[in-house]
Every structure is written in C-alpha cells, then in structure tokens.
Image 1 (cartoon, rainbow, N blue to C red):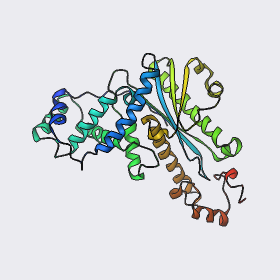
Image 2 (cartoon, rainbow, N blue to C red):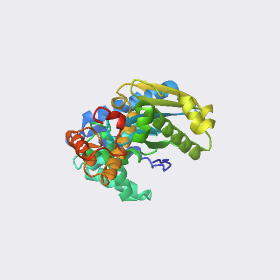
Image 3 (cartoon, helix red, strand yellow):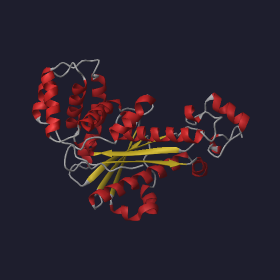
Image 4 (spheres, rainbow, N blue to C red):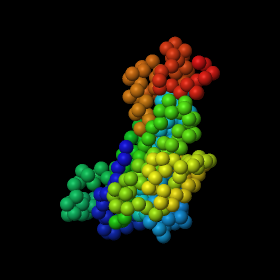
Length: 325
C-alpha cells in the first residue's frame, strides 16, 4: 500500500485566519486543548530532528513501527510514514487545524466569518464538498497517538486523514507503506529479524516513491525506528533488495516508546494497525473458530481453547506455541 501526495492545497488568505484565532475563545467541547498540545508535541519532536539532521540537505525523515509482535497467529505488519508537512511546517499545520476546528463549530465563527470562508472557497473554484472533507481530515489528525490507544472506531478516519495531509509548500511530499511478514517467516528467522526485513522493504518502497515523484534519489534519509534497537545490518538488507540505493546516506535513530513521541512513528503504527486488523478479519473468514476478527491473533482464552479443540493452522506461529504443541 503506497501513495505519493502531489495535490497542492490552496492556502486561506490571512483575513480568514487571524480574526477568529485571535479574538474567539476556544470552546472546550469542540476543541480539546490537550489534544492540540499532544499533537503539537509530536510534530515538534520530528521538526527538531529534521532541523538537526537534514534541514540543509536534500533528505527526508521516515517513521517506522510494527504491530503484531506478540500475536500467536497471523503476520507481523510494519508501517512507514513520511510527511514533510509534519516535520517541516508544524506551526502552519497547527494553524490549519485550528481554523478547521473553528469552521466545524457553530460557536466559534460568526455568520459573516462563515459566509466569507465559503465565498472565498467558491471564488477559487474549489469544490465545497472536497473542501469540507479536507476540514474533517485536518480535525481527525488530532486523534494521532500511540496506536494501542486510538479507538478502533476512530482509526480508519485517522488513517484517511494521514494520507490526505495538505501540502503547505511547493516541495511537500507524503509517502507511506505497509508490509506483512508471515507466520512461516517468523518461525524461520524469528520475530525481530522479520520486523527488520519488513521495515527495510517499506524503506525501499518509500525511496521508490520519492524517486518516481522527483526523478532523483534523496541524498540523506533519517529513519526513526520505534524501540530500543536500530535495524541491524541495514545496508546489507538494502543491498539484497535494491543495491543502487546504497548511494544514499542512511541515519538511524532508535526511539523508545517512539509512537508516543514522534508523529511519523505514530502515523506508521496506526497505518500498520489498521492494515493488520483488516487482514486478520479477512483470514478469520477461513478460520472462523479462533476469533481473529476480535482478538487479532493474540493469545486470548477463547483463542487457546480453540487451538486445543481444533488444532493449529498455517497462520499460527509454531515457535510461539512450542509449549503446547
């Protein structure tokens, strides 16, 4: 799954930005200051890394995370995400989100403000429905956090928002990828190596997207990897998959609890979580007794009872079940 974001969103004139933001009190019911602060902190974390490592070069920042590490059935899934708006224009994005929340709330814009907003939209020949959809996507970004804490009902809207982040400058980019490594692979090489291989495949995918969009390779890539360890032997893994990409300078930063600190890691985690949950729901149709649509392959009581009664499937990780086999 991959997408290159190339559509440029027209910016609102200042007259539709400053008045409501400077004089209106934010209604707590419609606009959570805690959510805004949390999302801002995620963006600022990545912005600081961007300014330290790649601001003066042709490079990109990518966040990596995995889901399904502890599951006893199904694949492990990794997600990778790179959005320049997140790490290059965090303050502009926050302003866009504030405006979006105000447009949604009847209490926060006067009738004249609202009429002016829609008049400006129509004068620029933008489709109103499309513009309103973008406003909803911006609001949904405030749900970004550790994927384990995002309610299932909100995750699909959040991931849609993550792949529709507006481009706020001429050099904006948005790339993402997810990848599965099967239970068979996990049994053969272990969970950690499977995760690293999966992350490397996502990296290759995103570099390919970058090359397709720009016609050249980035000079430098900074990988933000969730957890205490970096991807082991990254260059060797890249050499096997795409040797010509070794001319790029790769910098890895391992970040403990990265999905609570980095917007890019949190985004990658949520994309992976949605993809894996959907996959587990699909394969549960062939193996209806194990409850995978609900337990996502984790070792719940029902799951173990089903294993005892019906045995294991090709989707089960035998290395995880060695004690009961």
